[in-house]
Image 1 (cartoon, helix red, strand yellow):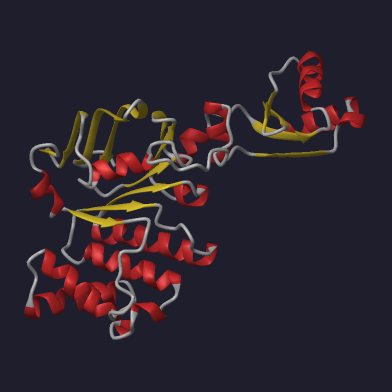
Image 2: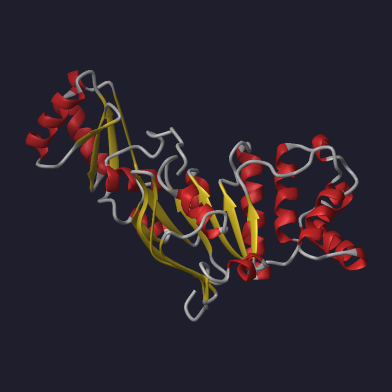
Length: 316
């Protein structure tokens, strides 16, 4: 991404809902032609930041610029450069695929032959041209998501914003949809910013920002973030995890923690440690797993919580 223009610059953005702090001093940059993921649990601040970026909510503190245009003062001009895919469907199921695109195009001043050509081109790009006369209500969930994406691309935006785009899709369709986003980035230089709580989706982004309770707690490539975790990750099931944690800490001079009722240890040579800890405390152990760090492990390492521990979505 070196030498690329900054597509999105976020400087010290904060936001409150009454007395609740939804975002606290968020600062990051997204490069042109990058696929950037905002990873975090529900309530972590992803949707609040998405709403501000997509001009659905005003900036109350801080600054955001889109290709050097200030979002607070040039929102109307910036909207023409944004394609937005919301978490909840925005299609009319009683209209055909083409009719949905046609009505959306009118909002951007597209009419007649120009609109038809643009719609057919984007449907062709997304493999939907043969379905253009189908009613949306007859399409599968994966195809409906593609139509949402076609709508967002109709006016040829330079930045694509997606809020939890894979929610509700089965794993196969999810991978296919992410591959489509990668193609838009690689072949058409579209800048993609998406919010997600799905690890596989975040792992295929160029860079990831991890949000927790309104704070940006980590920023980097997936591999850079995983390297923050020391060695392998060992997780142990025990009837008394706190007692076992203390015994392991004393015996092996490490720093285990209890997360979600299980003892968790970050340690080099995890396979050897598993052998030694089972030998030492066999009667206190029900099951052991170990492996290389994932983004879920990064989140636990940084916050002390499981990524999925907080599923209550308030408005953040």
